[in-house]
Image 1 (spheres, helix red, strand yellow):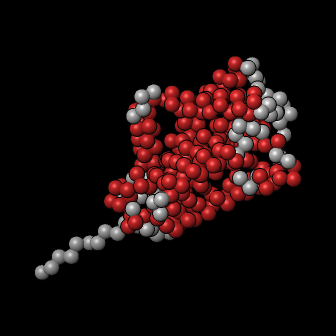
Image 2 (cartoon, one colour):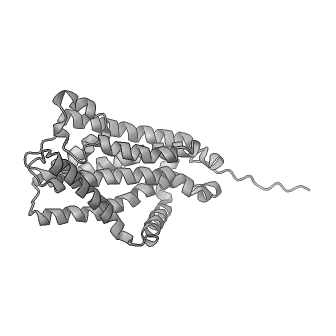
Image 3 (cartoon, one colour):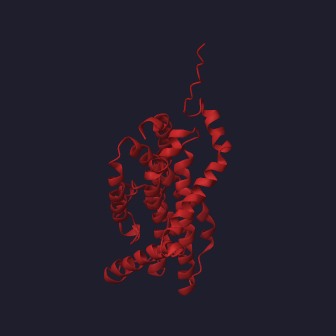
Length: 276
């Protein structure tokens, strides 16, 4: 008599409805992964949580000196450090999310190959870890406002909307890079280049208002342009105006990245356990 042991198949949810239901069922795993990464990030650094403050602060100082003092670019009726840091917040969140997401699946290879759970939990938890850095860095902005005695206008109440858009942009690009990095491991070398190049072509150290009007729409093909302009519009207020056509274009691209990122991630998800 031969006993046939049951075959164990690790696969994604059998239907979209079941898959999204599984995301809620495995929420404790999401909490665990996010909390684990937060603890590891700060426990294994010499200066701990201060690193989340020092890096954006030093970048802000450099940009303020180069663009504000040497190039003497306009600051939209706000102290130049506040202009720069209002852009540094969403940019650092986006850049950190790309770096964390791109390696998130590889870093959890043992977990992926042994047990089923919605793989979307892993890159999402990586973005949440980057969001913690974002919240910590926000303390620098509050300090700058106090130092310069700068009081934001009523527009600050719209900031949560632009934070959601920044989160969507980070998730969309992060899902693409996480999926591609599993299939093509050389993407881990491409991500740092994307982050560095994106910093130069995004209006972080300067206001996008210096871009000639005939090029504003083309410039807004960079999705982070609309996100950064939105942050500055909400935080600086005053004479800072939001270029609506460019913002809507960037918003459309962010949503396209998010939806296509989810689609591609779900399409490749069934192969992760085999390829990784």
